[in-house]
Image 1 (cartoon, rainbow, N blue to C red):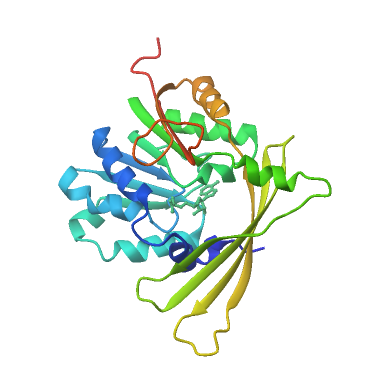
Image 2: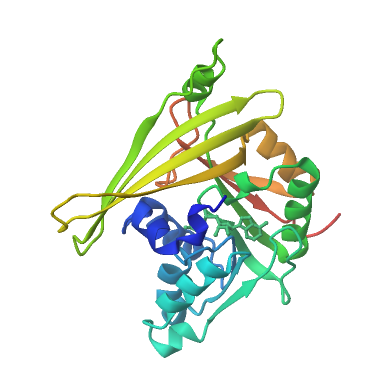
Length: 272
Ligand SMILES: C[S@@+](CC[C@H](N)C(=O)[O-])C[C@H]1O[C@@H](n2cnc3c(N)ncnc32)[C@H](O)[C@@H]1O
């Protein structure tokens, strides 16, 4: 079954422009005074390209890693619109994030937009954390960004008989007003594996088309559902210190109502 990653233009339409996390990462790399940055699961460049816009002025180099050729091609297309001095500071590489080791090591590794939910098994997760550790200079940061577990949605799916409610969670028009994308979502959760089976159903409309026929397709995902304590343990077990945990993209603390969890791990300055 194809996923939305085979339709990178629609991935971008789904996210729209000017999402809060873009500004968060632009500020974060400056706060951390990171120069050499790696983005794991860079996809269509939604975060990579806005970071690259800062590259020349802030002396950044950015390496984006992804396994999807479609998403990487979309990112490459966007990079072509950048000033040559910024474009020259970005490298996109097709690689599995479980085994990518940066050489030379980075000051900061970021994993935006719940990419790590795609890494399902504990051994694979440990591989990612260990590879990140090996890819950082001493004192370098590993920034993991995941959505908080949506317990009410999971509870519905665990009812007996199970109820898989469908919610319409995105209704987005393209900036040029030509396309409209509506996304419906349904989730089934298996608590014993912390596994969510998410089915997305997309309707894409041509806004100016009189007959209003939608093009419809589905995209299925299996996601690992991380809990905050589990994230802490992954960092600590692999040798990181935990420097900060945020519950939103404004550097607010993690709290009961938080929708996001962004954890910043730091590779210690010495191994002692
Ligand atoms: C939710 S998208 C995030 C893209 C981008 N960082 C953003 O914020 O829009 C997740 C991306 O991770 C990539 N991905 C998933 N598993 C991967 C793996 N094991 N190795 C490399 N890339 C992976 C997918 O191809 C996809 O482009």
